[in-house]
Length: 59
Image 1 (cartoon, rainbow, N blue to C red):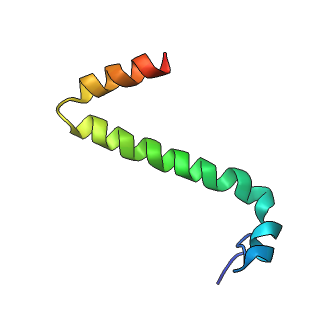
Image 2: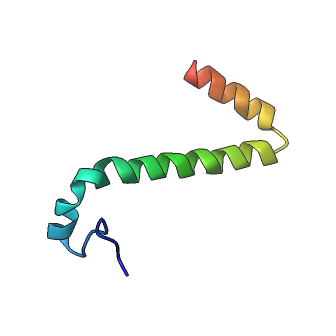
C-alpha cells in the first residue's frame, strides 16, 4: 500500500510530488554511488591508487 508521499503514475502526480522529489532522488543517487565506489575501492587491490586519484581530483 503506497504511503501518502508516494507519487502517482503520470506527469501530474510526479509534478505534485516534486517538492520532495527534487532533493530526495539526487540524495539517494549520491549515497548509492558513494557506496558502490567505496565497495569497489576497498575490494580492489589498487585501492590506494584510486584513493590518490580521488584525492588529487577533489583537492
